[in-house]
Image (tube, rainbow, N blue to C red; front, side, top):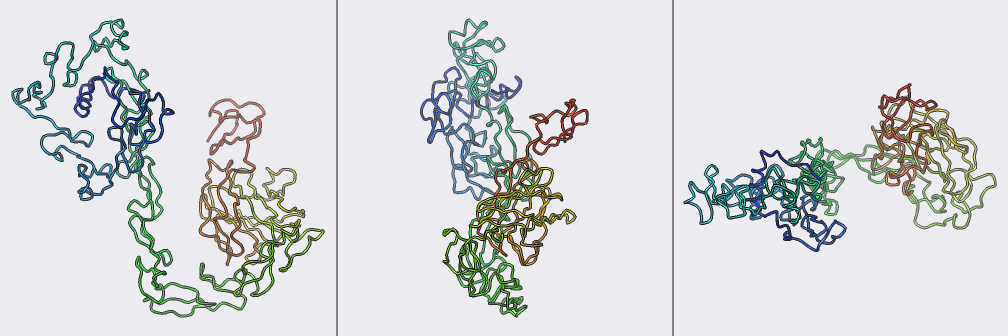
Length: 618
């Protein structure tokens, strides 16, 4: 229920505006269904399809009551969602009559912004032209109307003397009202007596009106906006007040964001209006920066994307690229290139990083790709298609051949990272994805943080990890029986970036088995030379969610040395942090006394509460 929109001093003016714009609807008769109405309803549960909103006052299903109930490209008019036309000037509205004027505050086409935008004699009310009959005296008015001289408008009435018997002049309109001095005169009509106004009314306060309505001059009147909804004014957002009485103060959108109706400030996905090159693909960004509106593959036309255009050149000016086993540098004109480096015998030119990387395998050799026995391709950069899945035979893969499982455990070449938790009591989960039990004592974990003083390398102790089995590597304070306890603090936080590298032996770029990086707070250190993690380190976990969410492995498409960020996503932690049982179940109030036996600190999302005789939460 709502708070009244204005003081009594402003009510006559508001009623005048509403009556002029809406044709003077008499609030004593609320039975007529509004335009765009569907079936009857008491709540929104009774409505569906094209009319999903219940107008509880009229008891009918409608398309909308507020623009925020329409899509991003529509507004509510006459309880129907009508298309919006975006504009930067009125030239964009010229072909969209009657909405031929660009409203700079909403950047949409409307009928008018000021009265001068209307033809003839009309006022601009709510961006709509409302005709009126001008006058100097009542002699200038159509029969049945009188002149409201100060306003120069012909109206139904200026005083009650202009109205018929049983009618009152309210907001220049003659309305049927039942005079009263007691509720007894009104309750038979289903109304109450407003002794201040002196007539029977539908409501005395907002609590007597349905949701989305407030009580104004004894009638339930639609709110200005939907409580809590977001709207845009230029590139600033405003939120409707909890009582629906109006919009709160506007807040300018931060840099690199655009205000979108019903959503507020939305981050850009590209630079607004810019046409840029993504490799040889020409990409055009929308005017608001929220979507890519066009992609042109220059390469498919035998061209190169250079400086925002598809051009006929031998190569991209000044760019480096791979040609066979050599790295070439394009000249400034794009007309030719020269060799910068020739990769060694056991290297290949990686087109993603344009660098010489060590071959993944020996070309033509029998090798293992996970549990699949296969053959290395001709360039040493991957494996030929097909092969034999040793796991399907209950065997492991060794040197490109399916063999039985060794009794003491196979080498841990199939152990992978499966979860990285960066909250309180950080942990890293290792999983044996092989078909044989693995002895993991030759493994090591390197955790590198933005601040190198927090880097740590953890030697994994002897342990036999069965196929599909997982083991947690945890800070010593949070380790459980069966976990690998790290003596040094694992420094993973949402305030700083970091990477985790799993290696067979002391970590180096040449013996990495798996790699993960996150940039939740800052960029992580660069990976060791030759290792890539594309397209970018993961983000999405904050100080508010660090103790309940985790970075979880969902697939294994990447492999040494090219690891993939798409293999990971934010998910619920398998071991969310929980306060000690002595901590209060909900965040205590700063300044209240501590209970004896409570630990020194308790966590509540991003807030930490310290017990020092009195609670201090920050």
